[in-house]
Length: 429
Image 1 (cartoon, one colour):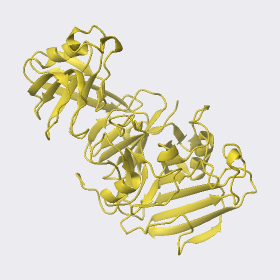
Image 2 (cartoon, rainbow, N blue to C red):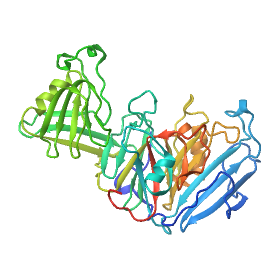
Image 3 (tube, rainbow, N blue to C red):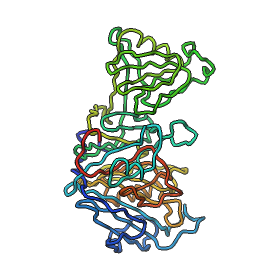
Image 4 (cartoon, one colour):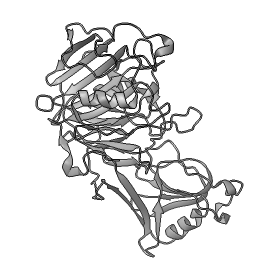
């Protein structure tokens, strides 16, 4: 599947973003906004539908637009099939040639838990934001906020991109506000500096799986089935996942602080740990038993070229590119994911504008879009490159911590968000 810009040199400049206060916006027409029939209407439903747009300049170079297409509520039993809508779309557009500020990704107190987008916007001092990456979500999980794919926050790779061909990544450099969209790959390893014994890493900050055939073995070194080898950082949670297996805690220099025959511990600042299950526990012991180790972690683009992870680099995971080089590239598909749902879109226009948009769905007042319809909307927005972020009940747009869109159901807590912050980027903020 063709994705987006293949390497870092293909970053499209988005310039500096907005620097003035944004007013909280209700679902109705914004006071002072300009309401008008749209000239270039959205490619949704019947051609003769009424479409009204209410736009407001929130700051120099920053515009919030609400689009209402279709004027009558949909019958509840026709939400997935009607050609009459209605559709409600909110679009935040940042013109880098006029605006100041920066775009970044942010999460809550730790990576493993969830927070509402409105709270993430408030906590980061952001002016606006949308929900971002796909995450574990299941309420019964101990770590519901664990990203399902890329999680890159201010040069810290806290979750690796996955090999699923559906995954597409959105990466932004907050220093320059240039964006990269495409499919990244990752490789990691741990190597003993003295013996040069090397062990591949499989995940970052993702609970390892104990082989089913060895689940009853308290001593995983007796297991003959392959398990997982995972690197954990203090950002993951207050403690690492507990259970059978092996855990080795390392200091800043990669030297062993302690080794445990069970998993689960608190990490101090600067420490990392390596967890292993199954027969990989023995391999981990062999690599860490003498001297200190070094860990490698490499992101590569679609051409296999390294993407340097430097301060100010942020990245989240989406599912399917929508447009690439101005063309629709979303694949054909079926099932609930491809049916009409609320959607969150991120992308850039050919002239470098950044667009963050939400489409309300699963409601008689806004029916949502299929994947094909979502891609058509992205193209209508002029997205040269566009990506489908987490949607459904997660779809949320917030301005100054207030809801702009109307989520399906109550606002859902999510794993992370893309937020627009007033002023230049400073590492650590």
